[in-house]
Amino acid sequence: MKPSLFVLFGATGDLAKVKLFPALYRTTTRDDAPETATVLGVGRSDWDDGRLQDAAVDAITEGGVDESDARAWAEKTLRFARVEGYDQLDPVFEAARTLEDERGLDGDRVYYLALPPDAFPDTITALGEHEAERGTVGEHLDDDAPWVRLVIEKPFGTDLASAEALNAVVHEHFTEGQVYRIDHFLGKGTVQNLLVVRFANTLFESVWNRDHVERVEILVAETNDAEGRAGYFDEAGTVRDMIQNHLMQIFAFTAMEPPARLDAEGLRAERVKVLRSTRQAEPDDAALGQYGAGDGKEAYRDHEGVAEGSTTDTFAAVRLHVDNWRWKGVPFVLRTGKRMPEKLTEVAVVFRQPPVALFQPTDAAPVRNVLRIRLQPHEAFQITFDVKTPGEGFGVATQALTFNYEEAFGDFPEAYDTLLRDIAEGDPSLFVEAEEAEEAWRIVAPLLDHGDVPVYASGTWGPEAADRFVQATPPAEEAV
Image (tube, rainbow, N blue to C red; front, side):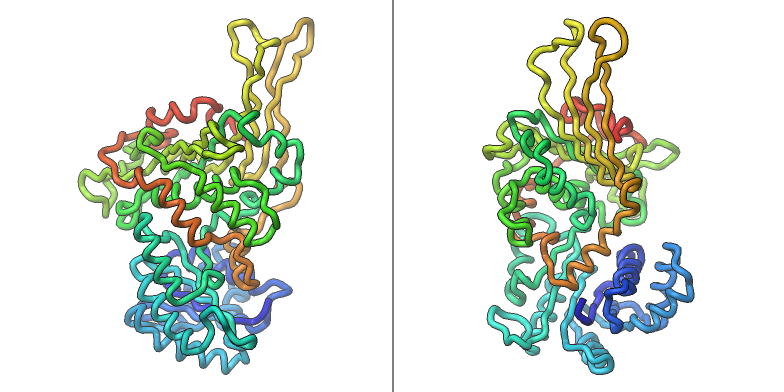
């Protein structure tokens, strides 16, 4: 990786502490990492270099890193620039020039925006104007001009109109090739493995279509709740916070066509194509819910920061229809919620029943084969099939073949490790393209404004209204 300056906006926030500092430590201490790794943290808090380094050391040591190693890295790598507002970035640019001169950097920069969404437009404008002066943005750049990459954390807009407006601001100052809209689900190795399972195995790809698949269910179950971030979440809800981005990305990987080339252009083109083919989800295609009390925990409406009588959705099951040759008539059910019985992310591909129940009693339905791809935790995949039981006659039992990634390969890299490395190397394959973000908002647009939602008890799989979407597969706790 070529040495560059990593400018982290929002360096005093929770995302930096929980995810980014540990990921930056791991990626910049690899054997192939540049020795001059430099991170400039930016924030409005009254911090200095020492305070930023202390916060980073705390975050890194929580992951098991020796404190002396974390401290040495932080003191060498991290510096801080305080700003009054994110449209007043002169202290950032002055600190960036100083660091680049001190460390012999060529002027290549990553600007990572881990900021509240309302700060994006002003920050992007200020960065774009500065980079225009440096000669690093535009369609026709000098061959020796430094590169610049703009990384934008989710949420990218709150609806289609706001996403289009934000894209307009971005493209006024940066080319699409310089923009990395980050969705950390795309950095998970098991999400990328969806492509390998499908396109490297004729066994699966030959039946990955409407002739053989009855339905596909994508589940992201969370055991956590909105406490502590209710101020943000009450303005967003699960459709905005999870369905529009994380689950929509898994859906696109599951439903897309084989790319012409396994590169950024090929992968992103096919993800956009399948989203274009997907109908808007109408209210009849969704079941929303809000967690109530249960398991000794208070209800969502009792959290500090939640508006009285809030109708914000903490659960959503959304049925999507893809109007293309491969998937016409096959429902895709995207389901996610908070305060569920277990933390679980998986894709379940439910194959069609045999046309005749030869081996079941006459009053029994033929059994469906199900391919489950577990994305987290305990990454694995499992396929169920029927076998004859011992003894006379044709007794049948459903069994499973299971493959566990950890047993075969050990731990997967963390998602942010993968994405930070891709940013440094200039590979946008696992990042969301402008039209992709807008199409995802188009699909969920009819679900964003809704009335009251049913309450489901904490520790359950959601409201009863969702059962009509997911009744075809076994309960999630019986998965891999």
